[in-house]
Image 1 (cartoon, rainbow, N blue to C red):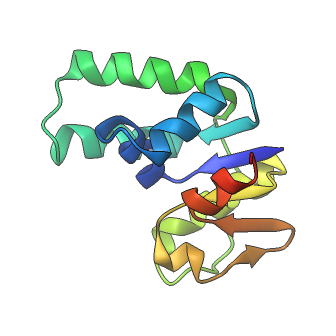
Image 2 (image 1 turned 90 degrees about the horizontal axis):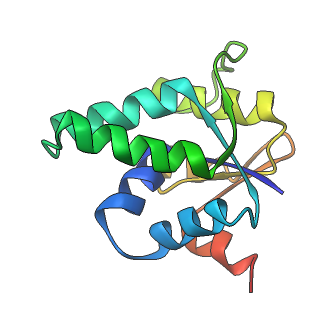
Length: 133
């Protein structure tokens, strides 16, 4: 099973000790294949730096942990289809398409409202966790 995590899931995994951090632990244990994209990682780092004022060295360490959890990191994806209300979310869809992902895990309502794109299920963290029960 392959999954792409939206940036908000990665942020929650490091800033809270809850469901999202548990999903990241599952990825590190290779309970599923976590697929990431350079642009997702770049956005993640920018949010940590701008919004949460985390130091560059801490961001580097955090990013290393995420990269270790990933089964694959895409460096380039085909152009994103125009399907989301928020065009910035289209890159998440493009990453999932190129990775042949089964799931996009997100807390973003603009993505969740789609429920599915082609064969990719768009799911919140709680419902993704139930797949392992």
